Image 1 (cartoon, helix red, strand yellow):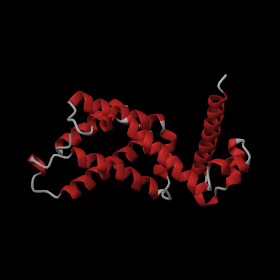
Image 2 (cartoon, one colour):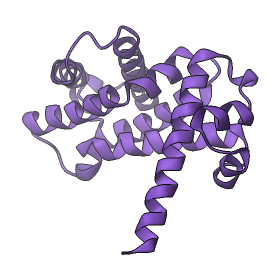
Image 3 (cartoon, helix red, strand yellow):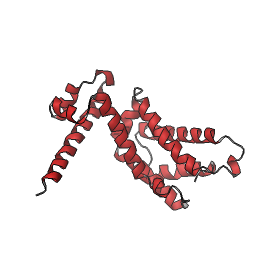
Image 4 (tube, helix red, strand yellow):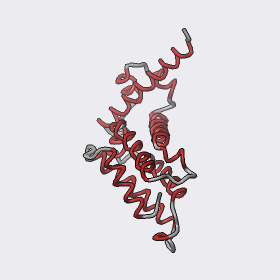
Length: 192
């Protein structure tokens, strides 16, 4: 038996319990009122275990946001083809994977969007999208003569707003439907 794997699994389970407890508490009360003691009690671990993995609740929030945004990037196949043009089906499929990730992590994203205290989440998500859109934006045709930064900021903000609306409305459409609709909007603005 590999003790390293066993230890890694225990550490992962502990971190998952801490993150889950933190998110549940985040939904129940204001961030400023959450204590490490609250988190450790909810996660069924001692305070020292929480401090073993995170310096404080701000570090926990930052790492939670960072982990989810990194996973969001990995879930979307756009990043795998950043220098190649994707066909229609591949593009919609890439967006679908992204919306599936949002759906699978509904609790996290709904907490982040519902809380006005987590502007850092919105800023990081926008930054990731701005970088991706800059790589994909075609400044010819409909976009010719327009300000590239303005188009990128507008599109990234619109995408975040669309995702937020979908999540806050309890995801009334399937990830496939959302991917197709968003792709049509991207096509209209020559982002593909």
